[in-house]
Length: 200
Image (cartoon, rainbow, N blue to C red):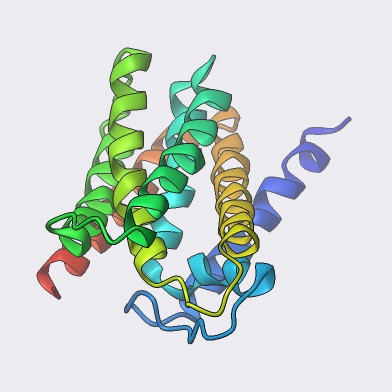
């Protein structure tokens, strides 16, 4: 397999993610989730720039760390997000949800920009904490008419797609100057997170 072919898919994923983000408003949770099912649950994470950037960043950071993080972090995030969603559905208050979501984007971007490779348990803890904030936001917005199971499965599936997009983009690490490109991308994510926090 040629190098050009090997990196065609990650390049396509990166382009698709960029176009998706470009066409979205910088305000989260804009979709009307009334009478939602799996399809609406799947589309909901794409309704806000903060969710997209955080979930792609988890995959990108996992690719940057490498080894077990490649599969552990993209697995931990949806599991912790589901737990946060249950808290939100149950009416359990969690302070600073939007601040936590914005901070997750800024901090994940910063970690990528710094090429931070903490011990795996520390990375897991951070990702799980961020995911709880995102999941809680999803859970509190769960429409009363929706099937919680189908809606939840939908947004977990969308999260997996965004993580895979981040992992795909992370393949540029194998290219010349790829590490610099990923770190520059992390800086851009961090800047977007800072903007989201300032806009609160």
